[in-house]
Image 1 (cartoon, rainbow, N blue to C red):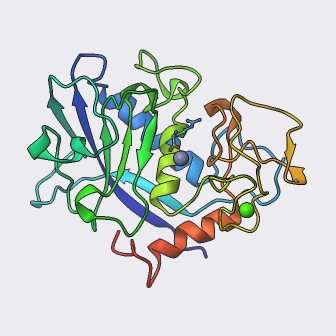
Image 2: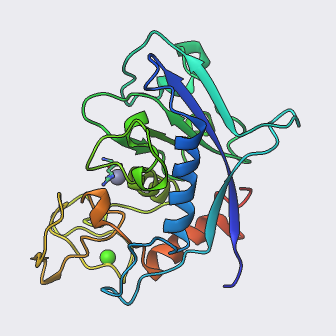
Length: 248
Ligand code: ARG
Ligand code: ZN
Ligand code: CA
């Protein structure tokens, strides 16, 4: 394409203690990881899979808020609520959360403790505007490789949860298609029997080698390092002319 798309991001931090009120530096470390991963500038990129791609999608913290005022692209709210679940309460001021900024103009990210061992979750394209965006736990948002003193939990401390959730936000399915040898609607990713965890080697399922390094598997952050050309095309389709996220 040679046509780079930049998506403005707003990060809404909702915290019940000082750890959860992650620093601006930790937030910036996550934006750095997103840009490195989506542009294939990540230092752990390797040549194992020839279909690995630079998606030509990048991200920046918003500099103008919905009222036209200058912003650093970060909102912060203290709350007595210690876990938020996955019912989208964090996206609703009426439930103690923070309403999204215009979802046709910004990628909204909420950072709050979800609980239940859930690292993050996302809404696919085409859902309700009022709940559009991605949610990550504070201890999975940012990377230990891009600063120090951050509130992060290994082995999900290199920012790949957000890379994965933004993949969903841009229409990517899990690589195993959420079924036994299921379909992820991407032809250059191998079929997987199920999700992989940790960082397995020599894993073969559904007749060929698993791509455990794909951001849309469930492996550890340190194991992941690519999106494919097919995934790039699927993501860009929702951003380009006729796509449901074209206004971003
Ligand atoms: N469980 C989450 C989801 O399905 C995120 C998994 C992220 N994995 C990681 N290695 N950070 O959306
Ligand atoms: Zn997922
Ligand atoms: Ca596939």
